[in-house]
Amino acid sequence: MTKTRIQLVAGAAVACLLLAVVLWPHGEVRPPAAAGDRPQPLAKALISAAGKVEPRSEEVRLGVSITGKLAEVPVEEGDAVRAGQVVARLENADWRARLAEAEATVRIREAELARLLNGARPEERREAEAAVRQAEAVIEQTRRDLARYDTLGKQGWSSPQNLEKTRRDHEVATARLAEARQHLAVVAAEARDDERQRAEAARDLATAQRDEAAAMLAKTEIESPIDGVVLRKHRRIGEMISEAQDMPILSIGDTAVLRVRAEVDETDIARLGLGQSAWVRADAFGEQRFAGHVVRLAAMVGRKKIHTDQPAEKLDDKVLEVLIELDGRPPLPVGLRVDAFIQP
Image 1 (cartoon, helix red, strand yellow):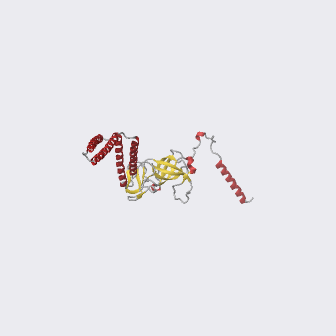
Image 2: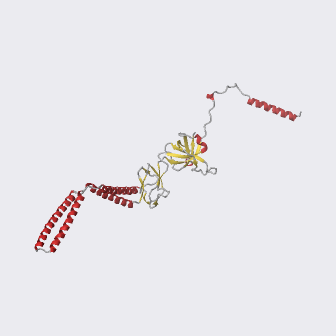
């Protein structure tokens, strides 16, 4: 055996000996650990997702339901508003005039109905009765004149023309008496059902037209539906506004509480649950974390709406929207893109 081969064999033996020493257990052999002594599993990995900051109410976009010219926007971006406060107004002089006309028509129709139901006034009844008495007196006088001229004519003391004139006067007086009695009957009579129904229908129609004019006038004033803050003014005074346009007049939100709408990849949705702790961060705030918790999980998976603009980002991934409510009132502006992390 050559010297070189001897050296190789000796080296291999030393290496095997060292390996046996390293692998041989030192100290006493311990029994298997009890169940309670087993090492704890590693913490579950965080669920990460892209998200955007939004107000608790979400963004409320205020528009109109009629067409008109924007006359007034008495609030500015950042102003606090109360529910029911008028935040915009369209020109409405024409609707105010229509409402005034409709209200006047209602008063007329109500007066006509009341007159019909209550009958004639006492003085009208007295006038009608006096007219009948006067007509009766006239016809009595013409009856006597007619008899007198008839007698005189037979005796030759009066011409036939006088008799004919007296006869015509009597006929006229008879007609006027009939007319006066008919008028008295109308004044004294109660309203017929068809007349009452017609008057009530006219009153109801006028009332409906008044209510319609009032509703249209109300639509020219846009009120805030919530307590919140004006997030953005989209339109300016003098612009024509229409319900067919997609752009609102104002955006309002309740920023007393901020939330983050995060989009979690569909592969992580099995690990999500309400109440889970979460935190978010934004590039503008460095490593500062803003804590919160999960308050809502969407019921349906959908496509991504928030994009990170990263080259490797997949735009067709399916995601589940998760709503995270932030603790306190962090200084995050609405619409800021953030990175969200959820503890399963």
